[in-house]
Length: 110
Image (tube, rainbow, N blue to C red; front, side):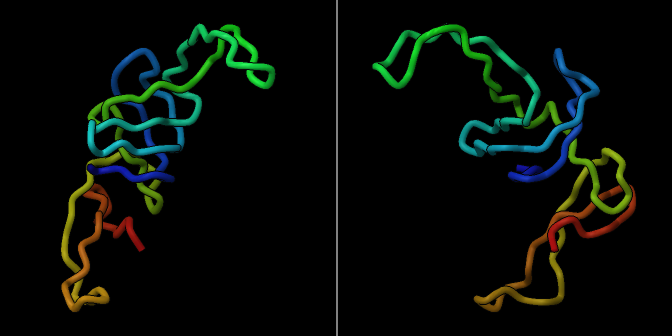
């Protein structure tokens, strides 16, 4: 997946198109992400005991990962990302794979 938890993203499709937010949770098994304050839905919940009353609860629903675009931390623009290998190696001796911004060519993963 091209985005990770904690990334700032721009929504490029759907009812919240044009809005920005931070990824709260990534669900790579289903290729979806939960973004703070985006895709708010109302859930009708039954009471679940004395500590959890029922009612209409607003919560963030997952978006498909293809509907968000990463905002590059260095140039501040929403851009496509790519992956490349660095010269340095990880703890197993393999080259380290990082994401980079295709607009400014800066490495996103530090």
